[in-house]
Length: 382
Image (cartoon, rainbow, N blue to C red; front, top):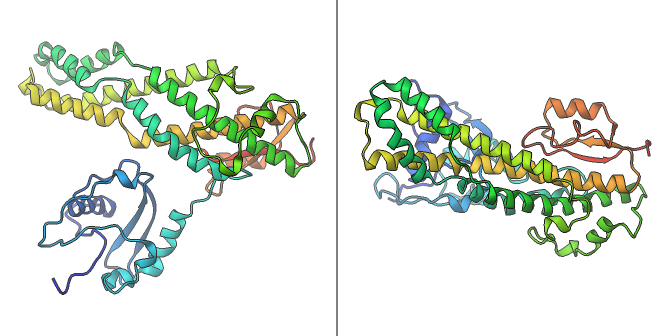
């Protein structure tokens, strides 16, 4: 015990292992925790002697990672460490010797660039506030135990024909699956209303930089003035339909909710098809099989990665639409795409084609899921 030192979870490659695959396995075994689905890889490093490779991941919900109990033999303690404390003598020397490689990655991950433009710092609080609600709404689209039981009841006769029949049954079963959209609609409306007003405020700040103001009697401008932006927090926006300019989004909302629900249906079908593969021999299933399928479906619909993608994309969509609406009210006819530092080649190409008509929806963010670019009044074109 006197020789014990803190180090990151680590282990050895097994036959056929990829380094990342082995790292995730060892992390799971040594921490006793489930590797978070929302984890985003932000970097990797190799020790100076080349003996090991490390990976750095970022997750939005550290509190959801429940660390296990150490075994008291190989592992005597499990804890989170602050970046500033990694040079302490209690840290294993091999990790301390790699700090010059690790620290820049950790610092970049900790200080991720915000959405560009005035008010971009509000994007991350909006995403963090709404992602949990979106995830809860996604999970409420179906009842996993009921779906699993319904499919199991149909699977018995199909087993005679084998795995292909079960896979076909999964597809036809999915086509008739009832997907509840009410909670998701409420969650997305909340994202849009909150982000719309924050985006309108960002749009007004952009106009201020150009010396342009919306007429003081404009209702959206007045709605912005009702908020104490120095004390702003997410979740305080007026009801969606009370926001000026928001009343004409119902068709777009319907299309989005339908698209998300159809993706849920497709993912459930994939989950069921994977599950039934190899289980033909003991159909009809027993209660344990049905419970296991229910857990697989629960994991499918209660997906932190998907919730984060939807929340971030829809926050950006509504922030952009709020800003663009204010631009139109100020008589702005052209906008520039302002790219995020991590922008993809598609967004960079659109930026290089600046400016764009305000009516041009195709080149208005989000250009793609997880897009974090923004817009600004085009300089010299107003």
